[in-house]
Image (cartoon, rainbow, N blue to C red; front, top):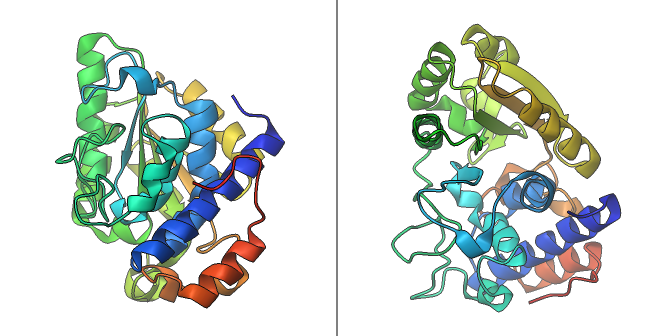
Length: 282
């Protein structure tokens, strides 16, 4: 468990990792990775009940996380390495030939921490529901978490999954939407307006919470509230308000950074805004 200031330091370090990884690879998804750094840090260090030493695909006896919006893999790789799933220096191999750190999460290289290939948007909630139901069948009281992009909610499979989870009372599931309002083609409201997400998920029988995804204190509070709300007949949805590119002023709230790698000058400028931490670069 990390204290609040340690969480802030670690989330800054994770952002430094993201910038350095994507800059080195010369490709990758920077904006959403930066925006979700606080959430991923709090989840893996303080909320998720997991043990890297006993990782298994089945996830028995542990909480399980699925990254449905797999394009933000760099932020996931960073927290996996820094919680002990694989050596931290391996972060420098992102998107390199033969690397276990593919551009989107892959199970073919057997990277610890990864239980499904993702990046084909819309599928993560279905997988999470399957795991949640399996835990119920096994008598495993642990929880299943999933993260989704708001643009991903334009996929029809998400709404089939949402309807199923509510109807079948999958109450050991906590899903989170990265609600930054942007996707690769621009503003979500211009591409496909999502309308009232709270009302939609509530209509499908979910408990809906909201949080500031760029405030580690609020993230930890709401995630713990979600955990305490499980087992009461409803899946939990958290609408997580974040800022794409959070932490780097020239990347903030710009959809161009959805899938753009910083060049040398941009990477240097970004790292100047993300001060070195006690945790150290890889």
